[in-house]
Image 1 (cartoon, rainbow, N blue to C red):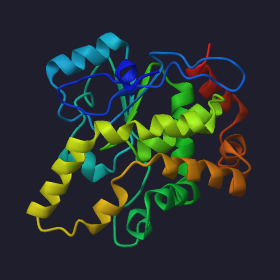
Image 2: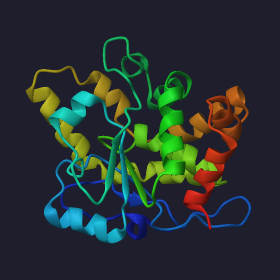
Image 3: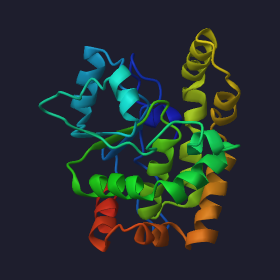
Length: 243
């Protein structure tokens, strides 16, 4: 399945993708128009918004921090026909937060798995229980969104290699967005060393994350159970993505 087939082109966003069409280990295929992943939606035009509505989007889960939402409000936050939920995956941004401590993208995801378990549980439970199609997004659409999407695909039985392939599709789609953010940080006088360290989306970062899940938690299913996702909620995740 090519990037062109799953990328939803919008004027006001870069990295909006459908995760349908992926084969699972038991021979099934993830459903189209059930789960979308995206970068921030605060710049969507009226035409963009209508396209997502026409695509069927019924629930939007915004993984950004409250200050991100305040500065760049989601255009669907006050919509009457789309359910909008802000469920921050990382609960703070400071000199001691996981983003500050992570020395690589892969380490960032390992820290998220270990230290953001309640927000991860809440997000996945919401995805399992809310009205589909569901769109999950953060700011760039690769880290917070990437981890949540990986766990959902894993719950549906998508192989880890395919999960890593899906994750890596963010790299070509976010080149201009990352360049824009970097230029803004420099203009505002920020040190961009940390941003540069965490901005790539290498396939190896997700593969190492899957290896970590297996070694530390016994795999995705065991991890989901360990963080408190019920049997019914794990079944709901599978129903979200599979026939």
